[in-house]
Length: 459
Image (cartoon, rainbow, N blue to C red; front, side, top):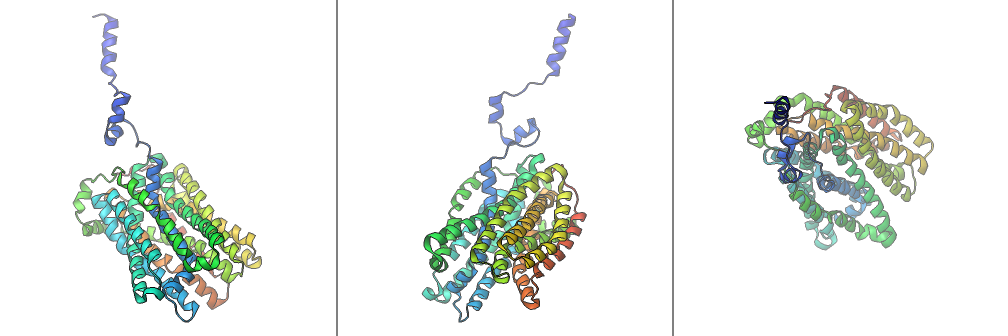
């Protein structure tokens, strides 16, 4: 054999055949991943369908707080308007009771049966709960049945919301390419800002169209129905998503909800405690932000239009800065984005509220709301990606669902009430700042204890 022929033979043996473009496009996703590094691109509509549940949660949260007085008068018409408001806030808090149950049951279900079926269950239950609130006749029409129906609706919704965050976030992480996991997961937080902004804009438009009186009487129901209208689209798209859980041997070994929970606590108790502190601090920051419209009106005595503008400012900051935080987490790692924004909140919150107390104007409250919401949103982006990345696939959904649900149940249901109570008891308009600073200390310490997960293999 000639030298040229020998070289040609060696080259033909050394070069592996490559699949054609047509063949590659017809391969299943798993096969494509075997031939190419990373994952195929995650479609935008898939991301939108996954984060829809989290957006609906915050839409409902913001709308309920914004119209708590009107809801109270509709279902709890007590002699004193203040008592009706308290009854409405109690109704709001009832949903938090079921969140830990949803975190346990649905979060573990997602680790056993897959992310997609869990996400279909949660968004369907969420829609049922919101519909029961929007369509139940008032107390004046059907009496105590109205109260029973809206309480049942809030319990159903709480169950769904407790189990939503774990499966949907796990899905985003498992479907996204490793270099983009922070940015993709940050859409979970940005969706909350989109929802808050939508509530602010829709409330303003509806009020201008039908007037304040009609908005208080029945317009708030339209606001909830508009939110529910996107659920069918979310259900259709979620039903066509590919499954990412890919049950491994460890996942099958868990076998049951009890097995998932036992393994989760046995192997990750310390991490769960640290992440609980992180989420608690983040949730207090978010609750302080949602309370700013009430703070503007009740504490600072500003006009009602300012409260609406504050809601919009909070929404804008909560859209842009989580995405920025996700990009930072992908570029510099999770721990720096966990630590520095939380430390900045700790240092700035008291001076910011002091300026607000000295100069209670629309400009100052919009600036303070935007600043604190921006820092909190950047921090939250690193939390939402860092926690599930720290957990193995077999307990990832349950771990995030349970810790998130417990933290939100305790601090999401109490922060608005407690900061307003502290203002009333002490007469100090800086009470929200002190409360936020205390939890920022806890959050900063917890951030230093978190492991760095940037670049870590999920499986």
